[in-house]
Amino acid sequence: MSEHTQLAEFIRKAVSARNSSIRALASSIGLPHRSVQNVLDGKEPKVGRAAEIARALGLEFYIGPPRNVAEFSETRGYDPTIDDADYVMVPRLPVQLAAGHGAVAPDGEKPVELLAFRREWMERNGLLPGKVSAVVVTGDSMTPTLADGDTILVDHQRDEARQGRIFAVRRGRDLLVKRMQEEPVGGWMLTSDNEEYAPIGTGTDFAVIGEIVWRGAWLGEKRASKKQICDMLQLFETMAQHRVDSGEAANLDEAISAIAAEMAEAGISDDD
Image 1 (cartoon, one colour):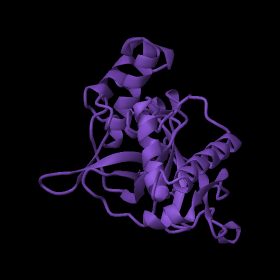
Image 2 (tube, one colour):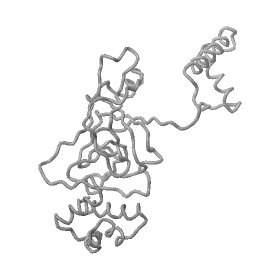
Image 3 (cartoon, one colour):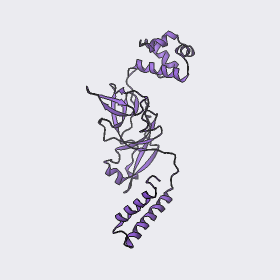
Image 4 (cartoon, one colour):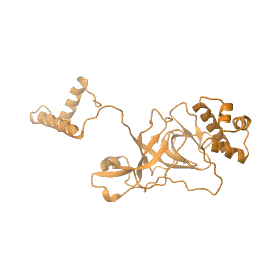
């Protein structure tokens, strides 16, 4: 998307947000109606006029040397000294991946918090300590797969685009989470799971940061405390062991399968 197209899109959004018209918007920001309308009609404004429109809409207008855009990397915020034999502490970074129109990464290196993942789970899924980071999704373009506020895990080892997979990407100064769609003639498009958002091109300044491999979200249901979960697991184990000791089952696996089947018959699912 060119700078001119982006400016036109911002103007349309400003009109929509104010439930107004192009003429009313131009008047409210102190610019001639025709100057604003020309941008929407596909005519590129002169530099001075583009700067005026950008400033009136609260946008940054910049001409100068390329600026460094802070990206989050696999080494950012990770401290191996606090890991233990069972858990890896994955940093959740102060970065938001936009599922809509883009967000810039802050310059800060310190993680917002540390999320504990079982080492065995990470190894089973091919995830390496120090090569993953957690970030937050903002926007609704990836719903229903990813919702605004979800925490997601980025695998920085998987930094090559793959058809149909969801990736964290940098497009210019924007950090996005999008599904990759390979073009028949070569190249990639960034698509959204929310059909209200149109696909966008990768542009000339583009990089794949990593694949999204895990999603964590609060669904609003009341959750059991850690103690309640431990108590239930202990009770489940005791019931299974009793069946083995009494001869009702040959081993624990058989006993657990029988209990699970009985729970299913009673209408108790794994989600309960």
